Image 1 (tube, rainbow, N blue to C red):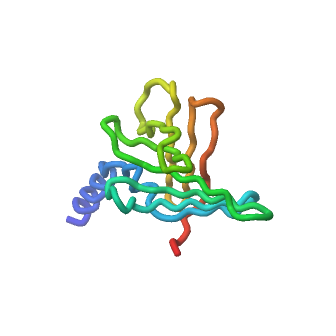
Image 2 (image 1 turned 60 degrees about the horizontal axis):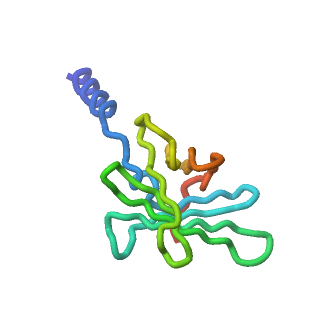
Image 3 (image 1 turned 60 degrees about the vertical axis):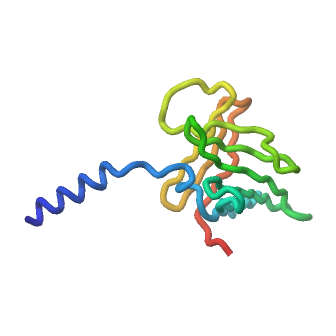
Length: 139
């Protein structure tokens, strides 16, 4: 009986769906390396299905540099957008979810495993990392 129960639990774990991008990002993250930065992803106050993200890059002198993002569901999955000073989408990338396809226009890759997060953009000019860090508590 125990063997059958253990096998059933193993199969349930193996077939669990992968977390969605919003489940992966939700919360607070920090990178304490040189060029320290933090990123916070919380539900948008006016659109509950959208996550609002803020990245702060801390400098030796002066206030941190702030960049705002959104993660929104779309017909093709999710879109990650960098916002301009007015809050409008300045650039958007489709979030890659294991499917093939063109990188034209760029694709955002969200790699979150345990307490680690990396957000990269590929195919929109030189590859770049938007954020890389570890889970942190939200104050």
